Length: 288
Image 1 (spheres, rainbow, N blue to C red):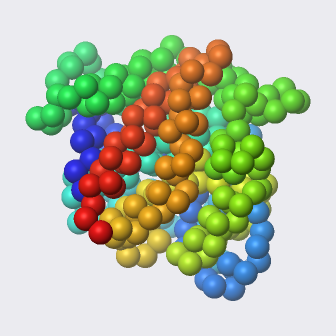
Image 2 (cartoon, rainbow, N blue to C red):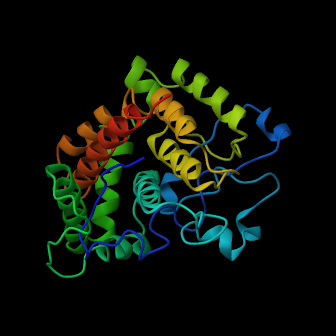
């Protein structure tokens, strides 16, 4: 599937293998017995790192191997046989997941600042379309704003957006909320059925529901790379996207892009909005 996701030669999503999901993946395969617990899960938003929300059965953070902790560029995380456009798709999904799962840690901030080196605006592809330029601009803005933002400022912005100060954040990053106005509704139940069918389950350690946007982006990353087993077919990826991401993610990213007081997360919203539109268009081109 040609997704028309391009970025400038001096923007490297690949150069920092830790960028997309950090040291622990949000989603891993589990055994059938673990799937029957029915526990909710969440992202440990206060930790500044992605927690062990989804792990293989019996796996802990201490038992993660070096390969498991590095989801990009290795056999366990990034399938080496992926076509370049599929690898870029996986990188973008992973980047979105990492940055929306928790406030940016110091390490994450450094990685984001390193996405851009220099001022060369050449596109790393023949396509110089408006969409490609918009992807470039969003990545550039994210990297440059991160260079002027402290870790505490980034955490404060994340808190205002997603936590609030005792009254909830300005955004609710859940499929159920965007589709029904409430959390823990039918979209979450349908998602859990599909996750069970795919053999993906929750550790039950935290409280956020699985329809959090960061979880869904991480699932797409895993379907593309084969992190949950075999690489998912384009039909399987399209089905998951159409059921659980397409109905609401574009609106969420638009809200993130335009939320009052958004600075660092504004270009992330732009990136997500454009990328979701690209994915939708590309999946619509699949002959089923």
